[in-house]
Every structure is written in structure tokens, then in C-alpha cells.
Length: 467
Image (tube, rainbow, N blue to C red):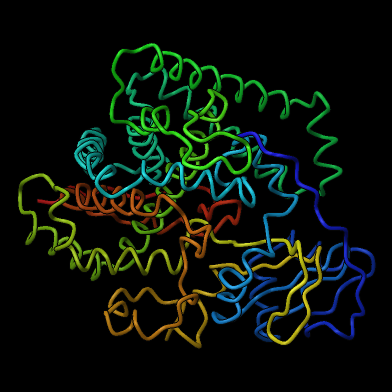
């Protein structure tokens, strides 16, 4: 959606002695090189300095927020004083001014506009599509086959999100959307890890990778604008999310006189691409790591399948089965704890405020990575172990709110978490009913901390048909 350009606060000048403790930094570059080399390892080591840590003062002032109470104060109490920083401009290259990149009042208006489309009664109508696509996908598998589970889960979630979002299942359109998004997502990730000035320069130059991205984005836009045009021309709209967005109207004008006004084609495009990016990638990554954890813990995989057999038996999984798959819920919660698909939360201070006894100046960056918080031994026994049984009702109520927040929190909590969890559970139930997963022992599973937490080099698995 079209919004005014954002003016970011200038870099703060501050006395190092007034800052929280933190690791030593190099002249001129601070901790930039350490972060680029191994961001997770660097932040894990930095977390040992305390609940609020100074990561770097050069070239930017960066804090690590490392306690649930401080994370709550940051995300909830002071949410009006923070916003997304300059890296948001990279996301806009793909998503435009959709919900993820919108700021301030624009974000609130867009969220209110989209929220009804993701109400429980709306998303539940997609359950049959999710189950049937998972079923048809696994029919192509063979007993003993070695597959890349990363690729398999990306393919099935791609087909589901294209169908539920755009209402199409034409093979060519699905392929074009998937290919264009995959290349664009990789490009955005690459550019996000570069300094802003260098990033802008590379994006302007006719470099091969930049040219490929612009062609991919043009192809993606061509498909989406074509679908929008066809839907506007149709006498009746369907029940996909694209149709719901086309029928949506602003309930308040935000000072622009837009009460009751429909979205433009560009606004619909930006919101659908944003929802596609969130719905496809995050669910696929969640499923990849869940299968990995089950495959490397046979006792939990057997219990997971025994519950499916008891609740569902030989018939197809349905939406009504999900409340009875309680161990599956525990498995998913533990997978999201260990491997949150969006592993990194960060904002920029637009106004000064106090946090943990320290004055946070405007222009500072604050990081609160879920991957660090959710592996904190203060709140999780044996934090690196896969223990689904820890997720009892008593345990859930005993831990601080922001010791576990895979979907974020506060006004920017993920708007599609209900959709994603329903999709993940139906895929897990449908495939787990029919297949055992065995991780290729020659493969070492390592995280690749990009925008999402994908496994490095894929996730090879051997498929074993259940008898």
C-alpha cells in the first residue's frame, strides 16, 4: 500500500561508559565482521553478558535484549517508540508496502483491513484443500526413496498457498509464482546482509543477479496482476484470500478520506505477495525441522504416529481431528522453540525510552532473536534437547510470555499464525499416517540463518512406507 517515505533517526552519539556491558569490538567496524561470519554463535556468546547487552557502537549502536520481561517492555510497552529499520527497504523491493513493511498508522489500518480475511471461520474452509494437496503430493513418493525434505515441503506448501490465496492450481501459474518467489527471496536475503549504501548501488547497477531478480519480479507481478484483472472482471468472486481482499473496504480514513474505499490493484498485489511470503516460506521451514526432529528421535516419531492411528485410523485427516492430536501440538511447539522459522526479531528506536535501567537513544537498533530467547536455560531445562513432553498446560502457564514467541508479539504479532498452524498440522497428520522418516546419517543438519531458518544444503531423508 502506498505510504509516505520513512525518515530514519540519525546515528546516535553516546558515551560508551553509559552503555550496558558487551563483547569487545574492533575499531571502525565494531562487531560487524563477527556477526557476518556467524550471527547465531556471536549472539549466543554475547548473551552471556547479561539481560541487556551492547553488541556494537560502530558503525551503528546495537543492543541485544536477552530477558523475557525486557522483550515484553520492548515489543508491547514501548511499541510506539520503535519501528522497522532501514533493512525494511530491502523487503519492499519484493513486497512493496504490504503489511510486513508498513509503519505506524498505515500498519494499523492495513492490519484492521486484512484481519477479517484471516478469521477462524474463513481459514477453516481451507482445511480440505490443505489435506488433499498433502495427500496428492505424497502419492508420488516411493518406499526407500531418498528425498530432500526441504524441497518436498516447499512444493506442497507452495501449491496450498497459491490455491488458497490466489484460487488457482494451474501448473504453469504455480510454477511461475514459485520460481519467481524463490529467486526473489534469495536476492532479498543477499541484499539484506549488505551495508545500505552498497546495497542501493548494487541494486541500481545492471549486475547479472540484479537483472535476474528484476525479471523474476516482473514475471511474478505479471501473473498476480493477471489474476487480479480476471477476478475483477468475474461476475462472482471466490472464497480465496485474493477475492476477500478485493471485496475489503477501509473502515477508517486515517486522515486520507478513504472510508469505504476499495484497494487499488497495486495495494492488492502488495498484500498478496506479503501474505504469500509469510504463508509459504514459514510453514515449509517449520515442517522441515519438525520432520528432522521426528526422524532423529524414533521414539517420538512412533508416539506421534500412534496418536494419528488412534485418532484418525485409516480415513483422511479432517479439521475436527486436530484438537485431539495433543502430542502433535507438543511436537510442533517444541520444533518451533528449537527452530523458529523467523528466528530473528529486530527494530530501530525512533524515539528515546528507558529499558532495563538504561536510556535507549533514538537511532539505536534493538535485537531480540527468538532463537536465542527460546533456548535460554533459565526457562527451559536441557534447552538444546528435543523434549515435546515439556509442553504441558502447567509448563505453558509457568514460563514468561516472551520466553517463547515464534510468531512475535504485540501489535505486530503474525496475523496468519492460525492459518500456518492448521496447514502444518494437516500436512503432518496426512503424511505421518503413511510414512516413516529416516534422516540420512551422512548429512549433518546445520542452520542457515537467512531471513528464515532454513537447513544448510537441504534436508535429505529416506522414506519408509508404513505397513
